[in-house]
Length: 128
Image (cartoon, rainbow, N blue to C red; front, side, top):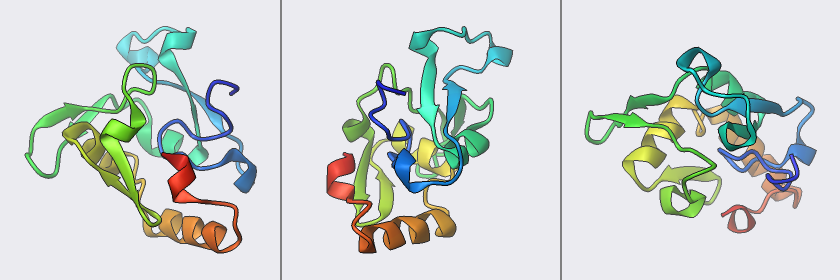
């Protein structure tokens, strides 16, 4: 939790702005032999954790290639994602695939980010 700085390590949603508890996510799921140790754990919002489930890869919509998901322990967030206002843009195959599998731009998620931005509780420029 401390390492994540109060943000989901996938979509950068602020923990203080949700009624739902954040979860400890196994980056590589236990069913895929992922260990329960710090280097394989991420702090995830309810939505990212729910949609990620045990997934470790998905299809990149641009290339159709099977692509691994973003790994908060080994990847640099800003190399794979960028904000376009309240829309989270995948910059790479990893970013695009992760955004799609975790449904980071689900209409409800975008609407919540927009409402929080209007209230001054979410600033995409500070979440990069």
